[in-house]
Length: 263
Image 1 (tube, rainbow, N blue to C red):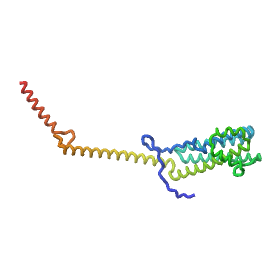
Image 2: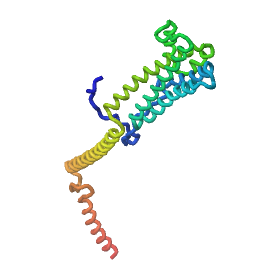
Image 3: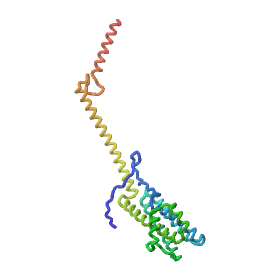
Image 4: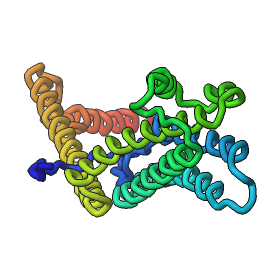
Protein backbone atom coordinates (compact mmCIF):
# COMPACT_ATOMS: atom_id res chain seq x y z
CA UNK A 1 0.00 0.00 0.00
CA UNK A 2 1.50 3.31 -1.06
CA UNK A 3 1.35 6.36 1.22
CA UNK A 4 2.21 8.89 -1.46
CA UNK A 5 -1.38 10.06 -2.11
CA UNK A 6 -1.56 13.87 -2.29
CA UNK A 7 -3.63 15.74 0.28
CA UNK A 8 -6.54 17.91 -0.81
CA UNK A 9 -8.84 20.48 0.69
CA UNK A 10 -11.95 19.07 2.41
CA UNK A 11 -15.15 19.23 0.40
CA UNK A 12 -16.97 21.88 2.42
CA UNK A 13 -20.77 21.99 2.32
CA UNK A 14 -22.72 25.26 2.59
CA UNK A 15 -26.09 26.22 4.05
CA UNK A 16 -28.75 27.90 1.93
CA UNK A 17 -27.52 31.37 2.95
CA UNK A 18 -23.98 30.53 1.87
CA UNK A 19 -22.53 29.95 5.35
CA UNK A 20 -19.85 27.26 5.39
CA UNK A 21 -20.49 24.10 7.42
CA UNK A 22 -17.98 21.83 9.17
CA UNK A 23 -20.40 18.92 8.79
CA UNK A 24 -19.67 16.32 6.14
CA UNK A 25 -22.39 15.32 3.70
CA UNK A 26 -24.81 12.99 5.45
CA UNK A 27 -24.70 9.32 4.51
CA UNK A 28 -28.15 7.75 4.18
CA UNK A 29 -27.09 4.41 5.69
CA UNK A 30 -30.42 2.75 4.93
CA UNK A 31 -29.49 3.03 1.24
CA UNK A 32 -26.17 1.22 1.74
CA UNK A 33 -26.59 -2.28 0.35
CA UNK A 34 -24.32 -3.84 2.96
CA UNK A 35 -26.48 -2.25 5.67
CA UNK A 36 -29.60 -3.69 4.04
CA UNK A 37 -27.97 -7.14 3.97
CA UNK A 38 -26.95 -6.77 7.60
CA UNK A 39 -30.60 -6.16 8.46
CA UNK A 40 -31.54 -9.32 6.52
CA UNK A 41 -28.88 -11.20 8.51
CA UNK A 42 -30.30 -9.93 11.79
CA UNK A 43 -33.83 -11.08 10.92
CA UNK A 44 -32.55 -14.37 9.49
CA UNK A 45 -30.45 -15.08 12.57
CA UNK A 46 -33.44 -14.67 14.86
CA UNK A 47 -35.44 -17.12 12.77
CA UNK A 48 -32.53 -19.58 12.68
CA UNK A 49 -31.87 -19.42 16.43
CA UNK A 50 -35.54 -19.79 17.38
CA UNK A 51 -35.92 -22.79 15.10
CA UNK A 52 -32.66 -24.72 15.47
CA UNK A 53 -30.90 -23.70 18.70
CA UNK A 54 -32.02 -24.41 22.29
CA UNK A 55 -33.83 -21.55 23.94
CA UNK A 56 -32.19 -22.12 27.32
CA UNK A 57 -28.76 -23.14 28.54
CA UNK A 58 -26.88 -22.17 25.35
CA UNK A 59 -25.17 -18.80 25.13
CA UNK A 60 -24.72 -19.25 21.38
CA UNK A 61 -28.21 -17.88 20.76
CA UNK A 62 -27.50 -14.60 22.56
CA UNK A 63 -24.07 -14.32 20.98
CA UNK A 64 -25.34 -14.82 17.44
CA UNK A 65 -28.28 -12.43 17.82
CA UNK A 66 -26.04 -9.81 19.47
CA UNK A 67 -23.37 -10.17 16.76
CA UNK A 68 -26.00 -9.71 14.03
CA UNK A 69 -27.47 -6.71 15.86
CA UNK A 70 -24.04 -5.19 16.48
CA UNK A 71 -23.22 -5.33 12.78
CA UNK A 72 -26.38 -3.50 11.81
CA UNK A 73 -26.39 -0.96 14.64
CA UNK A 74 -22.73 0.01 14.35
CA UNK A 75 -23.11 0.65 10.61
CA UNK A 76 -26.02 2.97 11.41
CA UNK A 77 -24.26 4.74 14.28
CA UNK A 78 -20.94 5.02 12.46
CA UNK A 79 -22.54 6.47 9.33
CA UNK A 80 -24.46 9.04 11.39
CA UNK A 81 -21.47 10.05 13.54
CA UNK A 82 -19.39 10.31 10.38
CA UNK A 83 -20.91 13.74 9.70
CA UNK A 84 -18.66 15.19 12.40
CA UNK A 85 -15.95 12.58 12.94
CA UNK A 86 -14.38 10.29 10.37
CA UNK A 87 -12.33 8.71 13.16
CA UNK A 88 -15.49 7.63 15.00
CA UNK A 89 -17.06 6.42 11.76
CA UNK A 90 -14.05 4.25 10.90
CA UNK A 91 -13.93 2.84 14.43
CA UNK A 92 -17.60 1.87 14.48
CA UNK A 93 -17.50 0.43 10.96
CA UNK A 94 -14.52 -1.65 12.08
CA UNK A 95 -16.56 -2.94 15.04
CA UNK A 96 -19.45 -3.74 12.68
CA UNK A 97 -17.16 -5.69 10.40
CA UNK A 98 -15.72 -7.60 13.35
CA UNK A 99 -19.22 -8.50 14.57
CA UNK A 100 -20.11 -9.74 11.10
CA UNK A 101 -17.03 -11.98 11.14
CA UNK A 102 -18.04 -13.32 14.55
CA UNK A 103 -21.50 -14.17 13.20
CA UNK A 104 -19.95 -15.87 10.15
CA UNK A 105 -17.85 -18.10 12.40
CA UNK A 106 -20.88 -19.05 14.49
CA UNK A 107 -22.71 -20.27 11.38
CA UNK A 108 -19.65 -22.17 10.14
CA UNK A 109 -19.27 -23.76 13.58
CA UNK A 110 -22.90 -24.86 13.47
CA UNK A 111 -22.39 -26.55 10.08
CA UNK A 112 -19.29 -28.35 11.37
CA UNK A 113 -20.93 -29.40 14.64
CA UNK A 114 -23.96 -30.82 12.83
CA UNK A 115 -21.90 -32.43 10.07
CA UNK A 116 -23.61 -30.33 7.40
CA UNK A 117 -22.05 -29.15 4.13
CA UNK A 118 -20.59 -25.71 3.68
CA UNK A 119 -21.52 -24.53 0.20
CA UNK A 120 -19.32 -21.43 -0.12
CA UNK A 121 -16.90 -22.17 -2.95
CA UNK A 122 -17.44 -25.92 -2.51
CA UNK A 123 -20.87 -26.83 -3.87
CA UNK A 124 -22.82 -26.32 -7.08
CA UNK A 125 -25.70 -25.16 -4.89
CA UNK A 126 -23.69 -22.11 -3.87
CA UNK A 127 -23.81 -20.22 -7.19
CA UNK A 128 -27.62 -19.82 -7.45
CA UNK A 129 -27.71 -18.90 -3.74
CA UNK A 130 -24.96 -16.34 -4.31
CA UNK A 131 -26.83 -14.79 -7.24
CA UNK A 132 -30.04 -14.56 -5.22
CA UNK A 133 -28.30 -12.85 -2.29
CA UNK A 134 -26.56 -10.45 -4.66
CA UNK A 135 -29.84 -9.44 -6.28
CA UNK A 136 -31.94 -9.11 -3.11
CA UNK A 137 -31.24 -6.90 -0.11
CA UNK A 138 -34.65 -6.69 1.59
CA UNK A 139 -35.96 -9.06 4.25
CA UNK A 140 -39.32 -9.23 2.47
CA UNK A 141 -37.58 -11.09 -0.37
CA UNK A 142 -36.17 -13.73 2.00
CA UNK A 143 -39.06 -14.24 4.38
CA UNK A 144 -41.17 -16.49 2.08
CA UNK A 145 -38.14 -18.78 1.57
CA UNK A 146 -37.30 -19.28 5.23
CA UNK A 147 -40.48 -21.23 5.96
CA UNK A 148 -39.46 -24.08 3.63
CA UNK A 149 -35.66 -24.06 4.17
CA UNK A 150 -33.88 -26.47 6.51
CA UNK A 151 -31.01 -25.58 8.84
CA UNK A 152 -28.29 -26.38 6.26
CA UNK A 153 -29.90 -24.08 3.69
CA UNK A 154 -30.54 -21.26 6.16
CA UNK A 155 -27.02 -21.45 7.58
CA UNK A 156 -25.44 -21.39 4.11
CA UNK A 157 -27.62 -18.45 3.12
CA UNK A 158 -26.40 -16.60 6.20
CA UNK A 159 -22.78 -17.53 5.38
CA UNK A 160 -23.21 -16.15 1.86
CA UNK A 161 -24.68 -12.90 3.18
CA UNK A 162 -21.86 -12.56 5.74
CA UNK A 163 -19.25 -12.86 2.98
CA UNK A 164 -21.03 -10.26 0.85
CA UNK A 165 -21.35 -7.83 3.76
CA UNK A 166 -17.69 -8.27 4.64
CA UNK A 167 -16.47 -7.70 1.09
CA UNK A 168 -18.60 -4.58 0.62
CA UNK A 169 -17.61 -3.17 4.01
CA UNK A 170 -13.91 -3.73 3.31
CA UNK A 171 -14.17 -1.58 0.15
CA UNK A 172 -16.26 1.06 1.90
CA UNK A 173 -13.87 1.34 4.86
CA UNK A 174 -10.91 1.64 2.48
CA UNK A 175 -12.63 4.51 0.66
CA UNK A 176 -13.38 6.28 3.94
CA UNK A 177 -9.79 5.72 5.07
CA UNK A 178 -8.49 7.33 1.87
CA UNK A 179 -10.84 10.29 2.34
CA UNK A 180 -9.57 10.79 5.88
CA UNK A 181 -5.93 10.53 4.83
CA UNK A 182 -6.39 13.07 2.02
CA UNK A 183 -8.86 15.52 3.61
CA UNK A 184 -8.27 15.12 7.36
CA UNK A 185 -10.82 15.08 10.15
CA UNK A 186 -13.03 17.57 11.98
CA UNK A 187 -10.15 19.95 12.87
CA UNK A 188 -9.11 20.28 9.25
CA UNK A 189 -12.74 20.76 8.22
CA UNK A 190 -13.24 23.47 10.86
CA UNK A 191 -10.15 25.32 9.62
CA UNK A 192 -11.15 24.96 5.97
CA UNK A 193 -14.73 26.07 6.69
CA UNK A 194 -13.57 29.16 8.62
CA UNK A 195 -11.07 30.13 5.94
CA UNK A 196 -13.69 29.49 3.28
CA UNK A 197 -16.16 31.70 5.14
CA UNK A 198 -13.62 34.53 5.35
CA UNK A 199 -12.89 34.15 1.66
CA UNK A 200 -16.62 34.32 0.94
CA UNK A 201 -16.92 37.50 2.99
CA UNK A 202 -13.99 39.03 1.13
CA UNK A 203 -15.59 38.10 -2.18
CA UNK A 204 -18.84 39.80 -1.12
CA UNK A 205 -16.98 42.97 -0.10
CA UNK A 206 -14.98 42.99 -3.34
CA UNK A 207 -18.13 42.47 -5.38
CA UNK A 208 -19.91 45.32 -3.61
CA UNK A 209 -16.88 47.60 -4.11
CA UNK A 210 -16.84 46.75 -7.81
CA UNK A 211 -20.57 47.50 -8.06
CA UNK A 212 -20.08 50.89 -6.36
CA UNK A 213 -17.20 51.75 -8.69
CA UNK A 214 -19.33 50.76 -11.71
CA UNK A 215 -22.20 52.98 -10.48
CA UNK A 216 -19.87 55.95 -10.03
CA UNK A 217 -18.51 55.43 -13.51
CA UNK A 218 -22.04 55.33 -14.90
CA UNK A 219 -22.91 58.56 -13.07
CA UNK A 220 -19.86 60.28 -14.60
CA UNK A 221 -20.87 59.01 -18.05
CA UNK A 222 -24.36 60.40 -17.66
CA UNK A 223 -22.97 63.75 -16.54
CA UNK A 224 -20.83 63.93 -19.67
CA UNK A 225 -23.81 63.10 -21.85
CA UNK A 226 -25.86 65.87 -20.23
CA UNK A 227 -23.06 68.36 -20.78
CA UNK A 228 -22.62 67.38 -24.42
CA UNK A 229 -26.37 67.53 -24.99
CA UNK A 230 -26.35 71.12 -23.76
CA UNK A 231 -28.86 70.49 -21.05
CA UNK A 232 -30.13 74.02 -20.13
CA UNK A 233 -28.54 75.30 -16.97
CA UNK A 234 -26.63 72.00 -16.19
CA UNK A 235 -23.58 72.91 -14.13
CA UNK A 236 -22.01 69.47 -13.94
CA UNK A 237 -23.31 68.45 -10.50
CA UNK A 238 -26.48 66.42 -10.11
CA UNK A 239 -29.20 68.41 -8.43
CA UNK A 240 -27.56 71.78 -9.25
CA UNK A 241 -28.95 73.83 -12.13
CA UNK A 242 -28.90 77.46 -13.30
CA UNK A 243 -32.66 77.19 -13.61
CA UNK A 244 -32.98 77.34 -9.86
CA UNK A 245 -31.14 80.66 -9.87
CA UNK A 246 -33.27 82.00 -12.66
CA UNK A 247 -36.43 80.93 -10.96
CA UNK A 248 -35.22 82.66 -7.84
CA UNK A 249 -34.75 85.92 -9.69
CA UNK A 250 -38.07 85.64 -11.44
CA UNK A 251 -39.64 84.98 -8.10
CA UNK A 252 -38.25 88.21 -6.73
CA UNK A 253 -39.36 90.23 -9.76
CA UNK A 254 -42.76 88.64 -9.56
CA UNK A 255 -43.07 89.72 -5.97
CA UNK A 256 -42.10 93.24 -6.96
CA UNK A 257 -44.64 93.25 -9.77
CA UNK A 258 -47.34 91.95 -7.53
CA UNK A 259 -46.58 94.55 -4.91
CA UNK A 260 -46.76 97.19 -7.64
CA UNK A 261 -50.19 95.97 -8.71
CA UNK A 262 -51.44 96.03 -5.16
CA UNK A 263 -50.41 99.55 -4.84
